[in-house]
Length: 214
Image 1 (tube, rainbow, N blue to C red):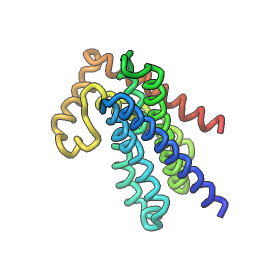
Image 2: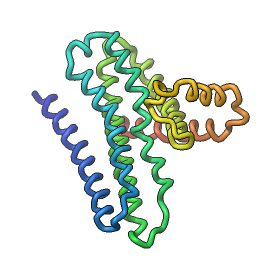
Image 3: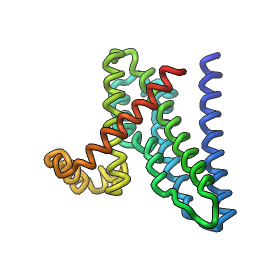
Image 4: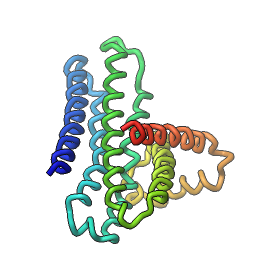
């Protein structure tokens, strides 16, 4: 009962954060009469998808007890997980605008980014809990570290090459061609791997800080 109450409280808090973000964005639209930052709401929805998938595993006994189902959901989860930290890169849109103070846009984007990463971390912790019975803890921790570097590469694909999670099904040939070029020609794609490395370290720092300072 206590565990159920704890999970309910965490879920309620996460969605309260999401509502706060949405309220900030719609106030900006009302105040400026500009719709530019409306895309943040869509990005936040994509950031919540991994949490919805992991919650499905937690609350569905069949999926929870089936390794095959777990792997299938996990594959989809991995494709969508980079959307959770992706919103941090929306800080690229920050600039001085006469219609609204720059500090408001800063708080707006950071609120979305922080909420997105919270949903991502909660989702990841749910998967860790589910897989604890059949995956060694050291293997889990290693996989988590690698996941953040993989997600950072996914963020690069999304931010600079404009690929989306579902493009692996819509345009797999073109997407895999870009990935292949990055792997086979690393010297010509230094910026790709530099961002992947630095962003991966940043995400690991955030996640393990939450774990250690809980």
